[in-house]
Image 1 (cartoon, one colour):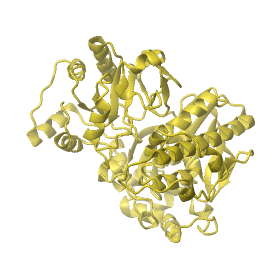
Image 2 (cartoon, helix red, strand yellow):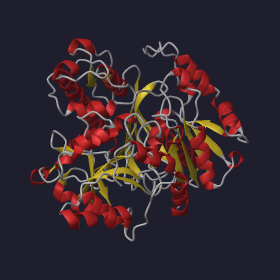
Image 3 (cartoon, helix red, strand yellow):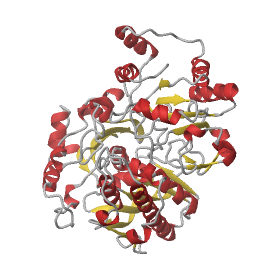
Image 4 (cartoon, one colour):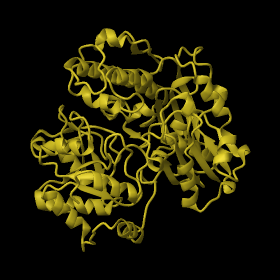
Length: 531
């Protein structure tokens, strides 16, 4: 079966292609349109489809729309209810349902030749669950937890994978939503809702959870696999922050309190789930699963032996999950994803042609790993563009900015280069076989979805990547999967004694991650990058 997955209704529109159970391609529309998150998650944008991402997925496999056996659309309007009935303040939400019902026709227009009758609606949280349970290695029998802002009528799904079947166990009905609560907090703290939640997570490290008891009145588990999360009087807890205004200790304390409350609730949910399944493996998806601080606490204090988080855990990942669900439901054996590098790529000849067209001076080093390592050792900032682009929000050594981790000033320097707030951390990439001596946390960690305690003896050696609370969100590099980047790290260690390099996404604030050569050249020309 040849199945195209589509996420479109809320935000992060994306497409993914699964052929005979194997993930061939997956990409977010933002990488083509250059609009961060593809669009804003408002009802009036619900009709917008990931047209460019879908067309590229088909072209990558040499397929036409009429060659597809099925299209998975990751929302089922038949399961939805009016917003006011669900207790949500969203008077135009009915537009979303209208657009969702008409999705087969919209898709046939966007992809000429597509038969609208092959479009299948996949429940939103089931698509999230499939994106994790079927994509994870060694998860044929496993538990899965999904948490986000909202789907059709729920905000959460606890389920179990048994071979090619997903068995739902519990869902939490709206308006109770951990994701929506965190979105409200993001807006209250002066950041962009449904976009900047990771900034709240970073800010929380600067605060103390002194408002935790008060927040527990509004956000808490119910002990039966569900939770309560609605009606938080944010303004009574802390004055709002205007966008662009300096943050105060009160803002950091509120962020820390909300983060702690989220973690407590998550731990209760995973303990309940484990009590039902007794599985050793937990997979996670949904926007809340991008909270790497909470993920680490689940891994550290929860009852599961292994926790695996899908690298495109937000709504973009439901394109992959919808396709994998239809494949499994159709009796096909699904294969774990080979990695997050599922997007576009260019040959050396194509890249050289771009450079010639742009009249950019270039060289072809005899050993690019050695050249880059020496530049990093000399404290250069290097823009690294290699192989297929990443699916999901993390730069994982394919579209990255690299720097020396031993220079404490490089955190401020990189945040200036990217135009970011100075409280934002940057991440380390480390050779997989060296990680355990430097970082304490879930290993391996190839997708930057957990935080790790930095060993005290290393904190002064790699200060640029150590957050204010002594943690780092690491990426482990396996030479078998990433041989060139592993060689860069090896060369850098030989020159500096440090098996760690700073890795942050190749973009500037408010812009999607670099994807194609034009994006790379524009970024290189507009930011103070050395190599």
